[in-house]
Amino acid sequence: MTTNTLVEGEYEIWRNSQWRVTNKFLEEVADPGLAGPPYWIALDQLHYRDVPRHVCEKTWVDPVKFIDAYRKAAKIAGFIPDEAEIQSILQATRA
Image 1 (cartoon, helix red, strand yellow):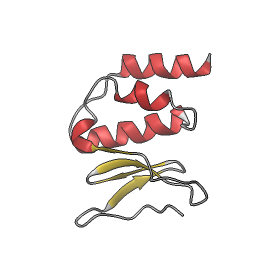
Image 2: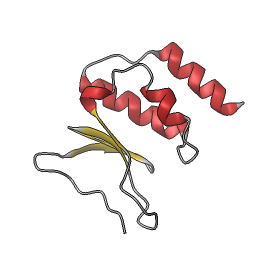
Image 3: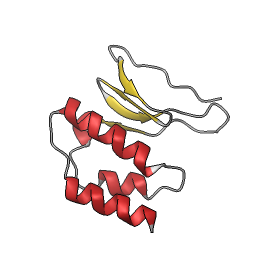
Image 4: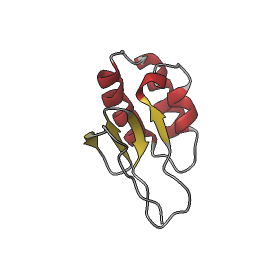
């Protein structure tokens, strides 16, 4: 069984049904019935342009929930996400 445990000094700031944002990570809220560790991205790695597209291409990801969490995490990490890229990703996932 997989669980989301906080590392030392980490605290949760926000969550939806698939993702949570902590002071250190944007991470999947793991389904305890699934094998494997939760997917996570360190906040200092979120600014890379390909992160949202890379994550949203995964079949198990709800792109709308991820983008919502990504925007919150970006604010905490101190950068402004590329909204044109985000809209392109969301349109591609609706097709």
